[in-house]
Amino acid sequence: MLDWRGSVVGTAADAQGVRNAAGRAGARVAGDGDSEFTARERLALGGAALSALIVELDWLAVSVALPQIADDLRRTPTDLQWVITAFMLGFGGLLPVAGWVTDAFGRRRTTIYAIELFMVSSLVCAMAEDLVWLTVGRALQGAAGGFAVPGAVAMTAGAFSGLKRDRGLAIVLASASGGAALAPFVSGLLVQLFGWRSIFLVNFPLGLAAIALVYWCVRPSNNPETAARRPPLRSGLCVTTGAVALTVLADRGSTWGWASAPAIVCGLCGVGLLVAFVVLERDASRAMHGPEVYGDRPLRALTGAGAASMTGFTIVSTFFILYLQEVQGYSAFFAGCVFLGLSVPNALSAYAAGRVPSPGPAYLMVSAALATAAVGVAGLTVGSSTALSVLALAVSGVGIGLSGGLTNVLTQQRVRAEQAGAVSGLALAVKALTAAVALSLAATVLESLGGGGRQASSDQGAIEVVLGAAAAIMLCWALLFLRRAIPVARHGVPPIAAARRR
Image 1: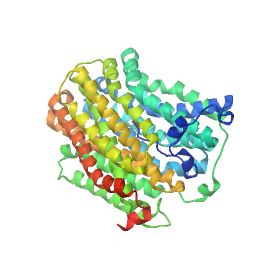
Image 2: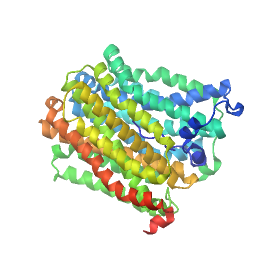
Image 3: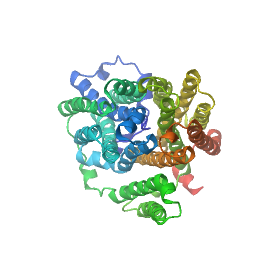
Image 4: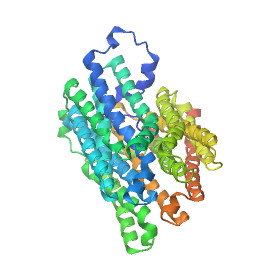
């Protein structure tokens, strides 16, 4: 689940119209004549929805296929964490500049080029004969997704106004949620019938359909003022390469030795690049955001809570699906069906977060949702029956979906309308990059506890330790966030400038 549903990841100019669009659209009557879409507009919406669905579908589909990919490439399933991590690094790393690119080069053009890159990278993945090429293809897929999703959302927000915009965004968000919900089932079916390469090949006809609809039905647009601004390339490069260095350290540290020269160099590079990002952002002429954004405690708390939610989902979707196939012996199709217990409640909860109440109760709901997710993930470690697993997955899905969706919506409500797109994109980038590093570290822990090799992926005790750690992370953040949520519930959310002085 790329935790952007309910979030503005497009352009700043469209931010106000995107806020809570799904919730408002569901609350209004669709019979208003001005809200009816023409045939061309329906096709345009179909192109935007399909663009978002492809990215969302591919993210979770790969998790179901990991054991089969490992067998075919003669690698261990834990080695294949890079297949997931590379996608997240590519996606999260380019989000900070996606809004600028979408505004400067046009929503339609950005979306079309992004889907074309996604199709090409899908072919690279489908034809990969080793882990290196598969990882490269997945990184390119993530990079393409980092432009396709903001482009699709911004394209919809810019093409309509009023009730039409609300309904259009609701359709795009619902399509992405549907893709996320059905991904395990679709992936399991494709892997069972046609092999793992089919989950990448299916992106080609879907991508062609999306490109055709967007090209013929969406009018070109661009923002000359944005094009004249300096793109935040240096800041984006620093945060992305810093996260890559830390991910490599988490993956290879135990092999190199944590005190070895390569590990120390990798760690210093990662930390140094992140420090360079902080230094660049202190320069107002180059910064992506003003100091009031970085200094705001509620925003930092929301981003941390969202990162904990995405980290929990990433670890569960990777290692529990591995557990179902490697320990329980389920087929890819049956494992995908079982995992619908998480993906469907997660998608519905993320969508429902758009109907957020006033900020005070919503902050408390974030803490409660994280705690609920922690309980559900912990429940995955206490029994091996299918019924118990589905129940625990459902509890986890509700908690993860609600916490992730609420942090997105509350982040947008926290900042000015013209900042919402860029701030939400930066927050989502932090979440994705954090989850990527955490997944790499979790794979290293699993290999260390399970003795390495293929046996690590079938070590039930080691997998339960990793899942327990994910539950502990979410529970700790639930308690930490509660310290921020209680004052907000009592006294309301302080203005962003006032929050900075505290």
